Image (tube, rainbow, N blue to C red; front, top):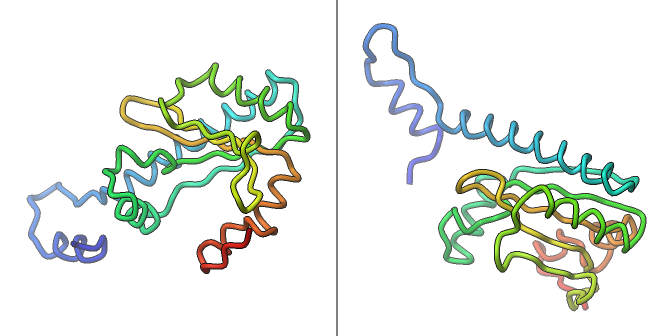
Amino acid sequence: MLTHALLLSILSEAPLPEGLRVVDPIALVESADRAALDLLTQSAWAALDSAGVEGRVSGRIKSTDSLLAKMVRKDVPIEQVHDRLAVRIRVPTVEDCYRVLDRVHATYRAVDGEYDDYIAEPKPSGYRSLHTAVQIAAGQTAEFQVRTHAMHDYAEHGPAAHWRYKAGEFAV
């Protein structure tokens, strides 16, 4: 598999016709991802506003390494990785979680089979959150997570903290 740097190195060695330049395809994808994430976070703020809920919004783009690792781990093509772009919405109450999720689903079509209610049915670690994958464009999906501030603190610092899973420290 060619790395980004190796590919650019090979391309830079080839003489190009006058007036043509090498376009970095990875930079183009990253730019498109940033633009899509900006739109997603704006729609998350709109969901909070239309639900009449005060909250916080953050977003992230899954790194290339993490994306490839997930594809290998789950043995799926890139089209089945629905959290390449992800937005997290934090709100005060459980009721607010469901209210905001309804607004998200009113804006985007949910991907069949990609909704998890870890509030009603927490993970064994105690992790609680709502996860949904939605269609944002033809062939492109994104994940929304909606949780309370307390659920977020538990997810980030408690036994369910993601870094604990990465380090192999799963605690029930």
